[in-house]
Length: 107
Image 1: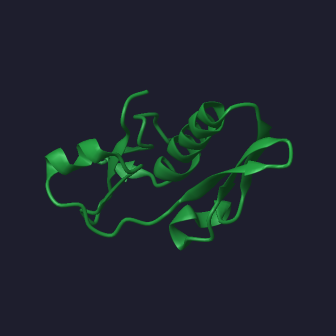
Image 2: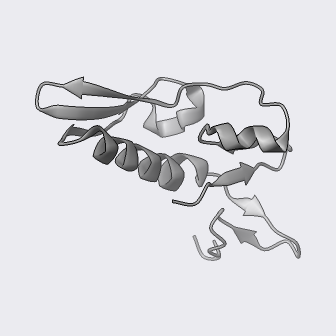
């Protein structure tokens, strides 16, 4: 899966943590976005109460994944789609788009 790195209008950078981020320089202000833990029926994915999770704070992404890898993949996909891509960006020319480049006109 490709690494999603979001640069916000205020210049802050958000991404899921990965050691490869050190190639960009010093990493500041890391925070846990979620937990992947063994549960009663498999692996569970639950978001933390961190304010950066927005409306998804405390959200249960899923329970009962058969493998930890399956749970981690679900965690990354959910965070990339719903948290990192949540803030509309302003591109050159003033057209508002989401972080994937999809136009927001009419929304």
